Length: 350
Image 1 (cartoon, rainbow, N blue to C red):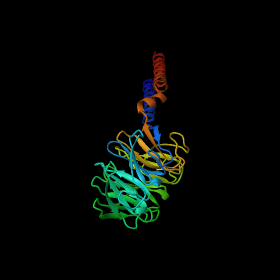
Image 2: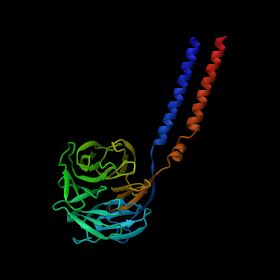
Image 3: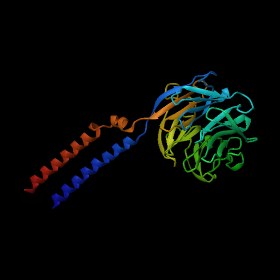
């Protein structure tokens, strides 16, 4: 009876080893890696050239719109970087800009641009035709997000606040003051909305992200100053994909970090430099319907937009952890253990 119990316990132990290794393998498959696809842009003011591209957005057709801030215009590209059109010049008239900073596209194809030094938000159609302006007197709008009803949320750094206005220009809500407590900000920059209408704000100088309900009630926060995963050194831009995962550009750490919508770190990519997949000052960020990520680099020595895609999880992970590494080794170990135990049992049962 004692040998029977020993045999059973040892078999159970081997099976546990087998499955624990299997779970480790499954975890390895879940790791996400983003790969460089293409890039476009160089310093200048001709078609397709850029001078401090701050904001980037995509429409429902995955066309890419870039706020070419120091050229006071918006440029439109295909999702592989082909120049399509541009609009805007320096000025205060309709369709003109004075430091266009960020950009958003709604589900109907309207394009919204924060015209920071003209104290307004301008709306255009997808071809760049002027629609209307929303004057926000004595405010300097920076980040912008638009909900399904056409309400606009924008960040304002002189007031360290978030403002919400309706599509008719009427004020709806505002929240935030200077500080480090929950719901307070120090230089808020990017802003985005998830499927449920929750509002995410990049609290740049506090090196954190704050999450609110759509009426400004604080929900949660994440991030701290540093260079590790989940830490920031001057985060700027934010976007949310169809799964409600969050992407942040970190200008100080020269990378992009991805999180779940409750702030759990998922992955990061990017290093300091001007090669493919590197950044000098990653600022704007957006994600298209296929999950491709576009990042604008506003540094004058690297004024580009880079496109990234997530690697095929099955193929890329299996190349790193294939059957010889997991299946064969573990199965051989388990088989040898079982055979040895059976021999041991037979020998001592007589």
